[in-house]
Length: 454
Ligand SMILES: *Cc1c(COP(=O)(O)O)cnc(C)c1O
Image (cartoon, rainbow, N blue to C red; front, side):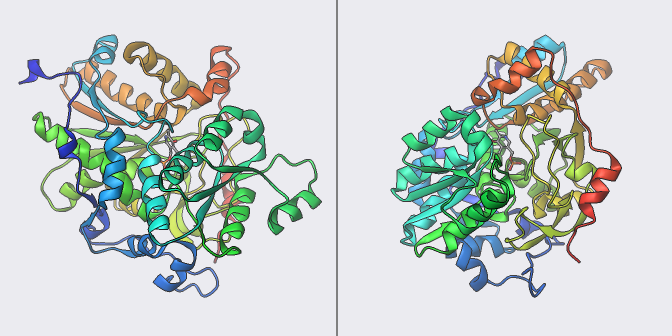
C-alpha cells in the first residue's frame, strides 16, 4: 500500500461531508459562554439574533449537536472547489532528507485563495435565506473580504466591506477582486458612519485600524434594516463551518490507510486550525485515538504562548460580546514590522479551552524563519504559500527534520491555508534582506492586558 500511495489522496465529490462536525458536543468541559458586556450574563439567542442571522446565532450557542447538516445549496457551492486536495509532499520530504511522511491539506484552490470561503459561503447563505438585503464586515489584509464578496455575489446579496485605509491603498488588486464580485469596498475610516466621521475629525490623516473598521461595519449593519454583520474567524460558528477541512482530511487518510501522528496548523483567530483538528480531537475526546496537535502563531502576536486565559472583548472597538479566551488584551496591536497576518489579539474560545486542558501544544515562530520555510516549501512543492500558512510549514519542517535525526517514520499532517500572491511586498522585504523580527516585551504585553474587563 505504502509504495502505491499517490501524490494526491483524492476524495470524490460524493465523499464530500454531508454535515459539519461540532467538537463542543464531545467536550466534557465546554468552552465558556459569550457574555453580554453590560450585564456580564451569557448572551441569549434573542440578543445574538440582532447581530447575526438566527440560524448562525443558533449554531454559535449549540454545545450539544455533534453533527449539523450542511444545506444542499452550500454543498453545491462547495462542489465547485472541494473536496480540497490532501497532498503527500514527496518533494519536500526528499529536499529535507526525512523518513517522515508529510501531508498537507491545501485550501488555496479557489479564487479567494484561502480557507475563508468555507465559512463565507455558509454565512452568506443563511443571510440570503433569512431574506436579508446584505451583510457588512471589515477586512484588513483582504482575504476575508474577498471570500465574502465571492459568497455574496453567488447568493445575490449586498456585501459592504470596510477595508482598513492603508490596505485599501496598498492592495489595489485585492480591492478590485472584491469589486469584481460585486462588493462595495469602503476605505475605513469613512464618512458613511458616525464612528468613521468621529475618528476622521479627531485624526484627519489617519490610515485606519482594524478596530475602527469593525466599529464602522457593526454600525452600518445595526443601523440599517435588512443587514447583518459577519465575522471570518474566532467565532464557534466559523470553526463549525471550517470542520469541512478536517472531515475531508480524516476521510482521505482513512481511505488511504494513513494514521496521522501529529497535526499542525497556523493560528490567528483559530478557524482553520479548529476546523482541521476538530474531527481528530473528537476521536481523542471519545477515547478512540491519540494525536499530537500543534498551533503555530507569530512571535510578534503570541496569544496562546504568552497571553492570559480570561474574558476579553472580541474586538478593539469593544462593541462585541465578551469571550473567554487566551488573549493579549483587545488593545494589543502587533508591531508595524510584522507582515505575516495572524494579528488577532485573542484565540477562539473552543481552542482556548482545549489548550487550557492541555490537549493542544502551541509554538511561536519568528517571521524571518517563517519566510525562509515558505521559500523552501515553494521551491520544493511548487506552491507559493500565504505567509500565514507558512507558520504551519515551518513547524511541519522542524518536525520532519527531527525525524531525520531520530530515524522515526512519522505521519505529519499540516494545513496549507492559502496562497500568497497578494503578499509580494512581504516576500520582497524578505528577499531584499530587510525583514526584521520584533518580539514584544513582557512589559508591553502586561500593559495591554491591564485593560482586561473586570
Ligand atoms: C485568515 C487566514 C488565516 C488565519 O485565520 P484563522 O482564523 O486563524 O484560520 C490563515 N491563513 C490564511 C491564508 C488566512 O487567510
